[in-house]
Image (tube, rainbow, N blue to C red; front, side, top):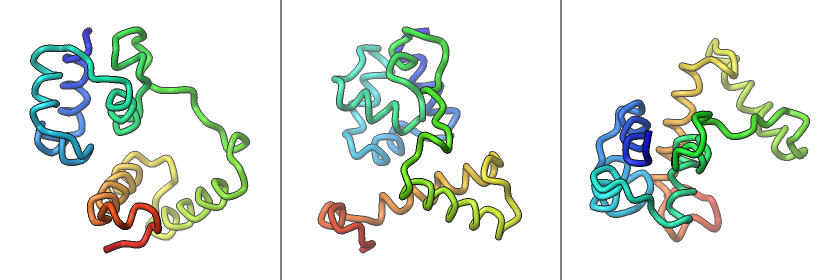
Length: 131
């Protein structure tokens, strides 16, 4: 499977239009259309942005591997601040009757993160305060 097919499959799996993906990544919609129709991958920065957004490796996007996920990070790999964040997210999940790894909770959590990214303007990116 080549880049254009993988990108389209990932986008559709998330239930996104080309316009929605472009908006989520803050890139022109024409770029997404071109990547899916022509198949030529974007430059490294945007390729990494796509990989991060979909939670896959750049190698998977480029068709170099059929294994989509990056190396799994274990709790032991995290620093103290990251562990605190995981514990806070775990508390929220438990409060609403979910396990941290529950697919439904992960879907809600990802949507909340994307929403937070959209409501923050460029001027807020440095101080992390919502608009």
